[in-house]
Length: 56
Length: 259
Image (cartoon, rainbow over all chains, first blue to last red; front, side, top):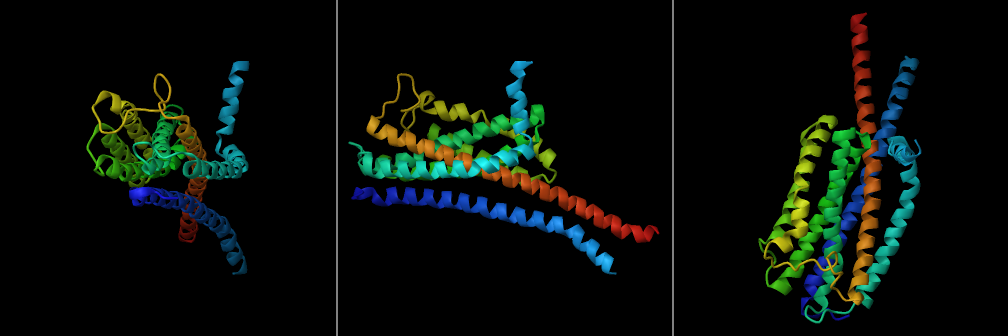
């Protein structure tokens, strides 16, 4: 497809949009994973300490 | 009592626990629909929609610029409604919805500004003019950035929620200015061509691909918003658990001293 003399502007606009959308999706997935890990760590913390106290 | 039923059901669905359940089941379907609509929209944009008789191929920027502009305004509108939910009903999910919408709205506003600029250079001969439409969109982007900064500045989420809600409602005055700027002032930006009295002025061969892209952006935005709301609820659970854990550790440290 010939995009004519302004191809760089058209492709630049689509490229920038793709970059931002992919960034939003990646951020959504990574942020979700980070919160799930933090939640799992905090849920395990009291159990870990109780078991170490029990050993003592 | 019967007319109250839908409101009661709505309130129940908006409880964080219920929300996590139904949104978790709905999210894969919404994300899948967004992908399908994006694929169809891109096919129509590149292989069906004709070049414009004046603008040539450059008109293809419209199929991302207009949906981005719509989403920028839509998310701010959603945030304004959520702000009312925070201030009037103090609903916990209202602030979550607002917090989750802000970065997505800001991203779409940035896309709108950059694609508009890249469309403007070959068509108007300039990347930027300080006309009413462009300036009011830039103001919207700055408001989004200001709200995100305010959330980070105030540590207590409840105080942050109220301050952000008030600022969001103040900023909502910009929405009608954006919409009607092209009618109220003489601008380089073209007037409305879809939502206008007398119907759209775009030829159907361009209108339908544009409507599909607007639908695709809307569904994608909703999918991102649902995901961000679910993550925000988790973040607040993490914060609560971290505070409880810190208090428990403090108590454990103080207990032997007291004995």
